[in-house]
Length: 378
Picture 1 (cartoon, one colour):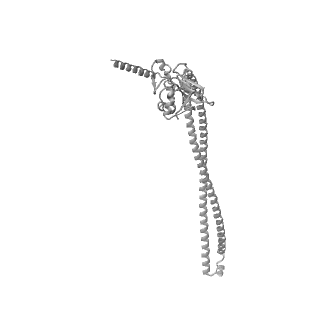
Picture 2 (cartoon, rainbow, N blue to C red):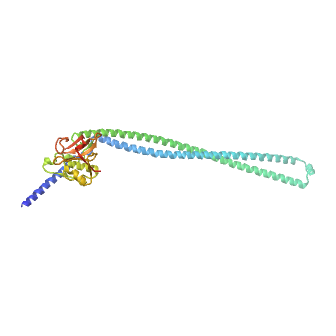
Picture 3 (cartoon, one colour):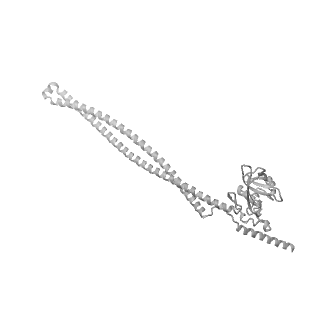
């Protein structure tokens, strides 16, 4: 009967504990988001929108820059083609001039022979008979006709060559004009693209300025929230106190409710529970996960057993511990000052508690480093 009674009492106690834990979890006040005011949220939305617009404008400007480079290359290539075709025209003009000179020579020779033949044709048959025999006259006439035919053929060939060259010249000159028109169009397109690129660059700069202004407003609003939370002990220096059980402290401190409630292996609202959480937040696993257990005064012993460095040299994101008193005390080192003193956050220290109650959050600055030994987790 006695064993049954003890079992029922134990089950009832568990029910009360777990019921309290569940209720506590539902009522945890985790102020994780600094940006809660309407002004801050509006600034945050404006920042996101302006940043997005700035990124898009910059991307468009970058794309246009590539297009402008391509158009510049195209213009250069077209100008090279125009210059090459101009050289062809110059060469064609030289060839035409050469053909013209040859033609003039051929025409002069043809005229001379024609005049001679014409003069001979005017001689009387009697004179012709006296000067030449019949066979000689026939031979002479055939020779003259052949020369006239050759010169005529040569003149025709030169004329045809010259006409072909002139046609080619006209075609190339027309091509040059067309290429100039194309080059002008490309240049105009390049100018438009350059204007757009400048516009998008200006837009990107403006949106970037808008984003900076929105970020400034957001920062001011967050600072207001930090100041407001700081007055209730929810903020560590310039950062939010992220301890998951912050909303339960100090009222759930076991010295107030008479029994212990654990979180991640440590009694909530105690210095060890808070330091255990900060180790997990910074290093990926809790102090318990590193093999540390027991009261605060025992942390150095377990840390050495776990192979962690324990010394008297403070560093940010280390745990400082004291062995004095029945339980000792642990703190979280937020930073080390130039003079060697430390800034720290902690739980369950009346001296630094914002509310002045056991089991509440506290923050101290310029604390002598010699006040603690230090456990390093890196």
